[in-house]
Length: 241
Image (cartoon, rainbow, N blue to C red):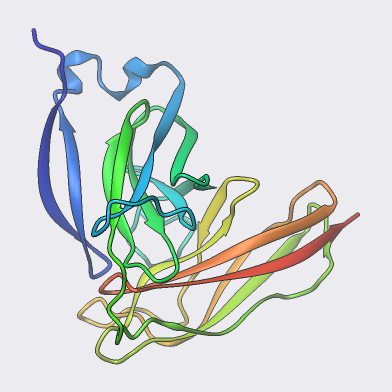
């Protein structure tokens, strides 16, 4: 049996965002995703797909495929986000992940977000496109934690007030990323999506447990429109005992 994976490229629509998806086939007959052991690295490089140069400002988020229907986001049908990381100075990343299939997303200011599907233990290349000069990127009106400083290990609520163009409304890809801890979670929208899958402007919310170790932490808000235009804003918070 030939256990070399084959590559098939297709297009998938997620939250109104068109993704070029690389599907690795032949896994089941060759031990499946579990053949990597309990965990493996997902690594790769983020490139400007026009110039071929590294995008050193990108953040990476992993979404575990087949992980259920949106336990973290009531009413939204999506798989769970699990891990995140910043890229290095050459656009590279390497994230330890439990075995299985993942969507790997790249977000960077001034670029349309991009994503591919892969398995833990594989390396991917993500090409992302620079925005047009007239791109209507979503606007972050406000982004904050309910209190600062945070209490270590206590529940805290983050809010993000967002506005997007009526011609390119928000997708359900509104995320909070802690690049240092490698965590990513999805915000809950202010109301359900329309019949076309568009999400409304307004205040999105997310409650989570603050880091257990005191220190200064930098969180990133990622808000993506249906066409992939990406707003990215950072917030620094203090955590105390």
